[in-house]
Amino acid sequence: MTRPEVRIYEVGPRDGLQAEAVVVSTEAKRRFISLLADAGLREIEATSFVRPDAIPQMADADELMRDLERRPGVRYPVLVPNSRGMERALAVGADAVCVFTAASEAYAQANIRMSIDESLAAFAPVVGAARERGIWVRAYVSAAFGCPYSGEVDARQVVSVSERLLELGIDELSISDTVGVATPADLRRVLGALDAAGIDRDVTALHLHDTRGTALANLVTAMELGVRCFDASTGGTGGSPYAPGSAGNLATEDLVYLLDREGVRTGVDLDRVLAAAQFIAGELDREVSSRVGRAGGWPR
Image (tube, rainbow, N blue to C red):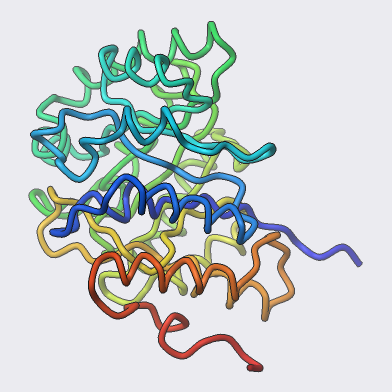
């Protein structure tokens, strides 16, 4: 019997560091990315080409990407907010790009200072330029399960934004629980609405935050519903600077441990992920916060 397989999309170097008070050096970021590739991760979101004054932790994006060691078979996506960001990404040889909007108008305004309509208009030339060059494009639908400013989010709004992104020509949707409010019932509600709209599971990923301790329960539910790509951050770092109270992302080591024990293939080595988690925790001058990061794997 063939074991199931899951893609782990690593967001630690970008989403994991963007809200940290400590600004990690460019050299340390490169080392972190190298350790993640050593662990077998094949999609590592490296940085974002946003304004340095907006996200100072990503101010070194050009320098980081220009001299980054790029392993064969590893994709290094970068976040781009607009055409200017795309120009910068192309200038340093980006091989994959991500755009980001929200299912909540209030969150879109707080996060990117645009309405949802304005953000989609800004993304159109970015996606067009990527398609012309054969560059893979991912889109984040933030606040898909709840908004820190306006509360509950209607699943129909998640569907509407997702459909419009797919019409632009993106390759993958990352449906995001930005503030970590979702429970398995919410996963069934939102993923059911995407199903009803005919949005294929093959283009749907899930981005979970563990703010209220529900990330792994949500992941198991999503796997039962056919999702096979999950975002995670080694060390459990992360959180949005525009989402008050949000905690870290689902930790890559917690995810790998669970999937290993469940017999699900990931191609990722837990011990090496733990080494990467220890490294980045040291750079942030704190202990690893994830459960498996503290306890280790099993059996030892």
